[in-house]
Structure formats: structure tokens, C-alpha cells
Length: 280
Image 1 (cartoon, one colour):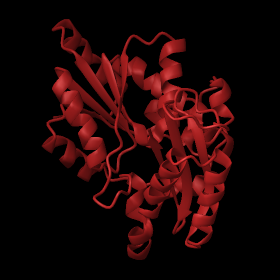
Image 2: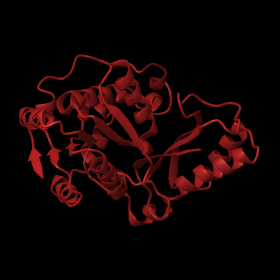
Image 3: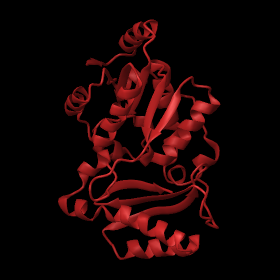
Image 4: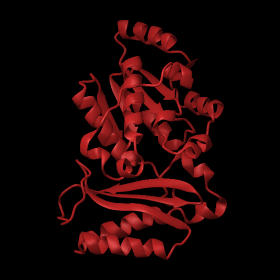
């Protein structure tokens, strides 16, 4: 496995791979890897000749400086896990390498900017869009792999690929969960032992909402139920719970069974912002 830190090195290596007509798979990450990330690597390995994983904590997508400061950075351990998963190339650039100058370009993703993460994290998707566009240009993959835990990010990047005609397949992979249902996340390592024990209530709330909707409760009734659920768990600070259309992430007022629906939740626990969703 090669570990590269400079765009020029990576471009040279991948140019040779393309001459050999190797199919390139790409898994962008911010490091602090867990089995969910490794499952993306494994799928990429099964569908491509060469797999690149980027590890870059992107400063432009953080609206909270403390969140950026606390984000775990575990490059040595990450590279060990990637080596075990037979990843071919790790691209771990510095912020200076990725941003010799701060970008003046801004990207607006339309209605996706005004709901859920877009509403609560101003400028977040602009930062995501720019860094992923840069990585797509650098790597030029045939296939790029993302986890559905960050459902809105996948929707944003689908729009990026479509509107800017990136010549690649964006492949969304199911959320990987711990045995108790907690969505795997790099942020989970920041939870105290006590907080980790109650964190699966997030997934419990999503299943409760799904069952209530399928049993005939209205969207407004279900949202009220979820608010009460979290009020009974004062350790959590609920930021939002939404019932949305899977395709455009717009709120569903009148739920109809048979239409693909996404239940999306964000809650703070032990000072850690946890995100999850359930699609059915």
C-alpha cells in the first residue's frame, strides 16, 4: 500500500494506472476509520482494479471551530486498517496541499441548502462540495463510494455529479451499525462510557417513528411522539427530527405507505453531535 501526501504524486501514479486501463475506485474519508469505512473499501476492492482512500479533515466544512479541533486524527491507525483491507493507495494531504489559497468559489445546492444539515450548518455543503469536487478532479475515479449514514451529503454529491457532469458512478452503501443499533461514526469514540450505553436510543427512536407511521399515525403525531421520547431522555439534546421524501429530502406532511421515505435525526449526547437516518 502506498501512502502519498502530494497531489502530483497521486496524479502520476493514477496516470500510469489509467494507461493500463485499470478501473479506479475511490473512498473519500476524514479518517478515524471504523468498520463502516472499511466496508466501503471492501466493496470498492470487489468492483475495481485499484482503490484509493483519501484521509483529509476538511476545515472548510466545519462551522464550529471546536468541532474541527476535537475531530479525531488517527492517521497511523487508519493506515494499519487500510493495509489490512488491502487498500492500494492512501492519499493524506495537508490543508496547505489541498488549499494553497482558500477557495473563492461557492457552490449552492438549492433546496438541499435550506433543510436539516443545510439549515443548521451554514456553509457546510459548500465546503463539502468544493473538497469533493477537488478530490474527484485529482483522483478521476470510475466509482466513488459513500455511506448512507450521511444521507443529505449523498443527495448533495449526487447533485454535484449530475450538474457538473463528473464522469463517475457515485455508489451509496448502507449504514453499518454496531450490534446495539448505533450507527458507526468517527464521533462515537468521543462518547463517555455512560453516554455510549444510551446512544442506541437514537436508532430506537427511528424505529419507533417508522412503526408509528406504518400503523397509521400522522406525520405531526409522530413528530410529537419523538419530541416526547427525547424529553424523557434529558441526556440528549434533540436538534431536529424530520420525516422526508428520500429523493429530495423535503418534509412529508401527509405520509403515504409505499413511497420511499427517510426519517432523519440529529441529537447531541455528551457534547457530541450524532446523526442517523432510517430509509424505508
